[in-house]
Length: 219
Image (cartoon, rainbow, N blue to C red):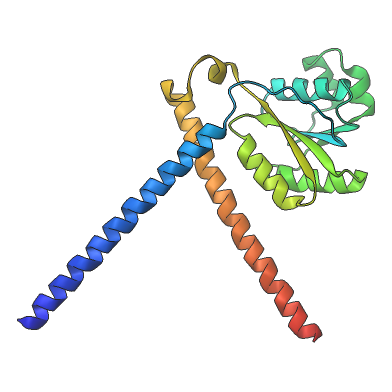
């Protein structure tokens, strides 16, 4: 009887501790989401400096046109459009975004291999190293910018990254929580951002472990 009572008390304590941990986890997620939303701009920024290169992550014509406008104004030496649909040429882009034919012919590089944000960052790293660029203006949508910057910073830890968020008309006109589709989009992006940060943390641990193993073998 005494043993059963002790077991019951222990079980209740474990359940209580589990519920408290779950509640704490939910509160942390909500706090993180609130901070994530707070960082999302609702107006496009006016850059006060340039960079060696400009990288635009595809996903909308306005992103590419904004990036070309930055290139035209001398904010960067070259532009990388990463995640381009296979078969697309600079001529095709010139039909969509007019008045930039000369720039598209001389100073724009297209990447077809990136399928996601991680791929965008990997290709941006390759491109930046190839051209000897140490600073990049990053052009993507406002809700996507935190994850894009995190991935790029992980690939290019020594590069200066200057965000140029493209704010959609929907986010500009109405708050994100007033539209179900926008709310789902922002929440989905937050969860993807958390997953990316977690993956990067494990990548860092794996790199540290590999470096230690190499040191031991060399000793």
